[in-house]
Length: 184
Length: 130
Image (cartoon, rainbow over all chains, first blue to last red):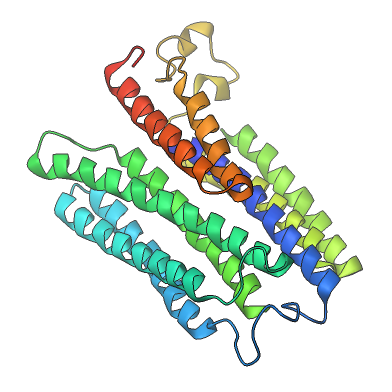
């Protein structure tokens, strides 16, 4: 039943991100056709879409690897499950590290203009979700350590629930990437 | 479980339809995205319930001929009353306030949030107030 509850919660999370998207498109519509607003970027600079795309693929790749981990856990292949979850963890961390680098090097701040506020709040709240997912993965790895040593059969429902959450985080990023990078 | 899934799927279907009409009529992004989100709010849990209802054992509440005795027994494991969700909410509030008042509320907020997380985990493991 845990997984059912998580899916209901993810339904409400869709609404949460919808609110952010709605704010984004409203402010964008008010500023069109100048988006991002003039003065956001110094002349000749723009968002590094290619770099973001590479790490987008890293994040998207972590979804199948996580799913393989869940399937391995279901079948009792705990070592394989551990390796898959570590792979997903590394991919997720790479994505988050790139976001931290991006934030550090971007020429605008949240207080620059509404575009800056939107960019930081949207990517930041998504980054927070990724971070929570990574913390959950560490908890799963702790659980798997007990399974590998023997004695802990593991709770498959917990693995499934975290995997739903992780797929959701990846799915939302496709929308966020399209809005923040491709529409800018 | 089928009834629940139909209710949610109706929500998804309704807002999907409204969203489609809205988009074709106005070509406006913000509202269309909200309606798309509402479509997902209904349809994602709805389809999941439908999928789940095929895998689970039928509950007594799904059977029109069930008796009261069929529903007897353990319903599920639920957490007891706890102060930690409140502390966690307080911590989250302080973290969010850091956007307005600066980094010092972030420290307070993170401390409260971590204390609450540790508290809630230990409480569920050991039981009773921690």
